Amino acid sequence: MLRKCEACGEKDECITCSSSFSGQTFALCRSCYANDIYPYDALVSSVWSIEGIDNATDWFLTIVENNLTFYGKTKEELDSDVNFLEYRFNEENK
Ligand SMILES: [Zn+2]
Image 1 (spheres, rainbow, N blue to C red):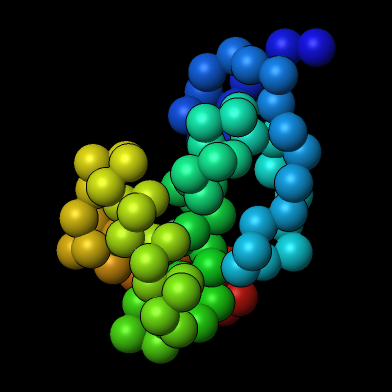
Image 2: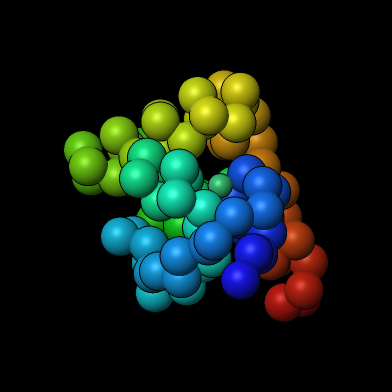
């Protein structure tokens, strides 16, 4: 059955898998699955949960950097998205 890949949006025979860095499950196309590409939002929330990319282990940093290249984003953009998530979290918990 063709499904939309949660990372790149292509329709493919998606593989349902959990990421190597969180307990979330994603439907990924074969290409994203093979290349360790994950939905961008999942990376943002995972980086947020470790309080910033500076706290990432080497292997997680490699995944993040590969995904940033895939999405055409910079570390600064990721930082700003992580900060926005922190802002939203604080707003919701006031
Ligand atoms: Zn994909």
